[in-house]
Structure formats: C-alpha cells, structure tokens
Length: 216
Image 1: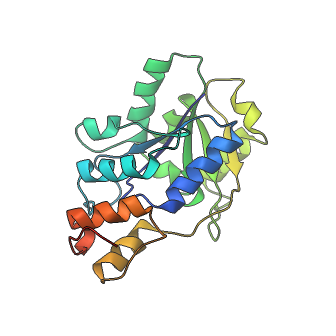
Image 2: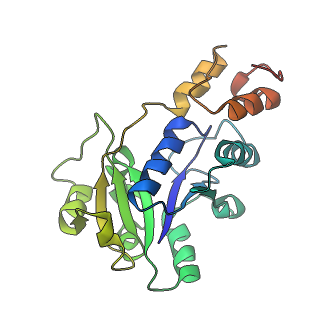
Image 3: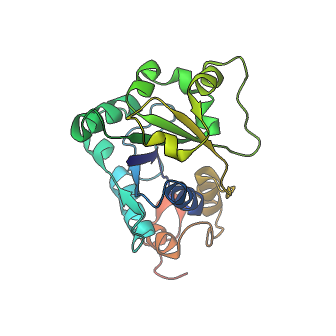
C-alpha cells in the first residue's frame, strides 16, 4: 500500500506530523509520504519558498521511519493538482497496487471543486480524517461519494487498488499553519507547535518575519 498526504506545509507543524503518524498506525505502520505542493491552486503565495518548505519537512521527520517525503510536486512546473500526482503514481506503481490519499474533512467538503475530481476515485482510495467542527453537507457530492464508496475498515483498502473512502477519527491537534505564521510575524514564539529543529531553522532563515537568530 502506498499512502500520500499532501499539503502546503507552510510551515509543517505537529498537527501535520501527528496526523500522518496516526494514519500510518491505523494502516499497520505503513509509511506515509508527505507531498508538499509547488503552487497551491486554491490559495495565494506561500510564506516560504518550495526549497525552504522542503528543508523544514526534512528536519521535521528526521529519525521517523514511518514518515517520508515525496517532492515530485515541487519538481513539477505549474500548479499542483492531486489528479496529476495520482496519475503519475499509478503509472509507477502499476494498476493493482493500493494507492491511498489522505485529506481532512474540511478539504474533502470541497472535493467536487478539485481539478478532475471525478477521476480521483478511479486512481486512489481516499482517507477522510474527521476534523472537529467540520461536517459534510448531506446533499453535497462529497457526502454522496462517501455514502456510495465508504468502508468501515482499513483492511478494505487492501483488497483493491482504488475506489474506496474510509473515515478516520484520530486525536486532532488544533494547530494551523496560518496561526503559526501570524504568531511569528507578531513576534511570538511557536515553540511546541512546531518541532524545535523547524523553529530553529525558521529563525535562521528569517522566515515569516522571524528575527534571524540561532537560538531559542
């Protein structure tokens, strides 16, 4: 089974990392590949460059064998569309290998506005991680997709290559990258919201308005 968890990771924080580990454990400790996007299609410019975000990710997952980085979207020109990434992975993995993408409820609620969203279930399974305070509109296309393709167990994802939707409800750390950027820009410390190595590198590079110093 090949699992991807995409995002801007601007910056990566403990919420991202804990969620990825929870998914890995629920699937039997399979590696989860973090896929930083190059140009997010649904938001403005990132606060850090692609190279800087990748560096922060590398520091964040150092020493954790269940988390890996797939930088293919950073190496691809233009906006980062999930359908393109899944097609590329499907070509590499073959037709029969289970391929899984992870998304939060908030993002899945707008799934029918994604580029080529109708093609995605034919390329991969979808794990929807429930986020407190976010619910699907029962009349929406994402809710219909969940009703038609939903399964109760992670084991069901192993029996075929794609097409299933599994909801998970792991512990959720309510941390946002936006809030972290605002905190840093306001002169406050994000320590314990991000790994220490990440905060040290943010300061070293002077990202998000941080004072460029080498200590905490």
